[in-house]
Image (tube, rainbow, N blue to C red; front, side, top):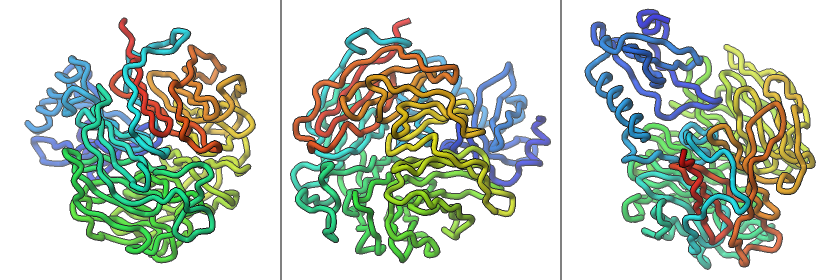
Length: 500
């Protein structure tokens, strides 16, 4: 595709789709001669030509000299950072600023990782034992790891040095009574263990964190000082499900989005710097907030946010929160937790408790039709990853499975030790599988041709304070050559970078 055609065709704002989700770092490019602009992702160089990846997946090439001086400087910075093995603008380290990473795919950008593990697993670099109770994941920026945990009745946002595990600061953002349980209007089911379930989100020097009972705060990433705070129940009439608020905040531009649920406004957008309300999705009244996290996407030229609730999937316009389309999910009778997968105008959803999975398509007029529906994937809360047309994840009763995204058919499954049920993360062509029962961690090929393991080890130490009915549920993350795992108060860091 030529640049002239590219600029004419995509003169309206486009948003890059990569691996099934909107990429948050798509930038605006300017043609020096005409001043015309387009949004696209930098996809590398081909000689003197810059490669741009568009919203529809097409890659366009044009001479670098045709772009603005600012664009040319940006490309040179990318090339320089690439030669050092870094991500530009990250201080020598890649960022993982939110739940499932910058592009919401749960696929790490890391390469050059170990392709097999020794019998005892990769080298353990450090263990931090002060994270408190809960199942919160972690985000990474500024060389720091951000997470949450309950210390007694205090809900804390915690920052660690990501390289050493040393605590940098810890800030209370709410209270958590571990004695509150199911049926109590102020509490949430605690037989699985109390504590935060949400992963904090980083953006522009601030961290956004959600407690299980609705406390929502913005704190400084530098020192943890509270910038502003809200309560999803008292401020927005929110209502959580039986296991508390568990989604992770989504930041997009000047907005931070959160889903209070309830019958007033199921989704709200706040100014990320002040906490002021920008809009409320008043036509979204789901009752229980449920547990999935908002997805950002663009369909039919409209930027939008997609949310998976108990009985439906809803998309709202990013600009004002108005409803664009709805898709029924009648099977989600108990809880829906996994983040959807978005591929162009198609959306894949799955949930446990026997619900199954389906792919549906959104038409040019925002009409919705099912592509397929089946019960091959029944993913409870370990999540799925989409790689090259296949979905990998744990399905209740079937173990680790590979599912064809186009047809929904089962490609293969594995139910051996450590492959019964758990969470999945992907990096450098491999799956990092965490078994919830024993805390076994497995390195598995992301290969539709069949299951092949390249190593397994057991997480150690594991929490003795975890509820007897709780499990090892925090999802793995690989970033900057390190594998991060958590079981309640313990956060583990392993070296998975290859020496060759």
